[in-house]
Image (cartoon, rainbow over the protein chains, first blue to last red):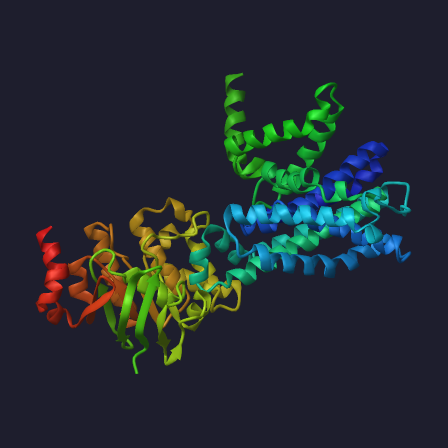
Length: 312
Length: 240
């Protein structure tokens, strides 16, 4: 039974467009699914392999620019961005890996953060290629949302399946072993540098897909948006932390909560502009009380609500 | 030719000589104990053999092949496994998954790795605990898990770093039996140990280090009669 839950969820999501939901609601669903993809991708490196990256905007933005630039400069369909992004993102990840994967703990975190910022500043200043802060505007393929929804849903299903297969394979065991103790992993015959690089590259490529979709869907990007530290890199981490690190469903649950929360908070009077502050507070609360996220600590949550129910 | 040859190894940290000019061999099939007071350089020597440290001078050969300079995972793949004095279980993994992660080194498939891991848990008496997260294990079993993980890589030589420290008498007997069984399988053992009773009962030969230098080598009987050793180590232990 449990094996079929992903298929059931997928089937339910697939019939959603037939319910005649408003364009705004569909937009929210598309964002949720897109953030699930980013979250699942980050989770592979940060959750399973334990290498916490604060620079995944580098890959998201690169994916987005691949899609934008093949359309803007070459006149191709921006959907080619998915294919074009793979070598660019993978090579960037490998170069980044050479530099940052030899670092551990906070040094690794800071190095990834810096690389994300380097990508943003590069995109801002490489104006002949990227138009800098003017950004890239492309012709969107469809006005209607349904097609976009199915495309991102298919991408999410692919990402979910790929990560599940990976996590349960030899690589998955190696990733978790590296997370738990790199020295022990190394002395048990695991080539830690190689497997960290693999985790980084796979994570980066899927994040790049998410970015390429963003370009296609939004029709406009600029460096401040797609290479954003706060709105991309940190939001990706929050999606996973809130949902549950190193769980299959965590990034999906996290994406639902973060997207809806962002919408709700931003629409509030006065405090709406301070939504990032509130995200920060939320992150602190989650880390203290539910360090494994909503999915990882679901038994703890059930106890909490069970008690409440009994008291009422 | 010995299975493992430690050839004129020196290891300096800054100006400090943690090991100076150490040479000895470990013969195939034997249990060689490495003893010496705290800070004598025993774990440093393990770190050199296992590849965590590159020796400042000298070389280590395994099956005649130079291994100093290789990375730990390469040395492990060649057939040298180790345990850690301060146990390093993969905490948020079950006991079984810990061993599976090591068994993957030689297993082609996940089913194969799992089969091998189950057999090793049986051998080390951890079968009942296979689904426990390893951070929840008591120390005695963690020490055994270290041995189980090392065995899962199918080593020719296993380096045991104080696998008996902190065990109660009952656990001690279990672990001694396991070590003897490992020897019966034809696996060569190099062991660091402070527990004199254990050392004298299981080891074939003993190498004694003091202040980074080899001060004696021989059978347990020879070592316990060696005045240098008695002064440096046993005398101290008896006096304590």
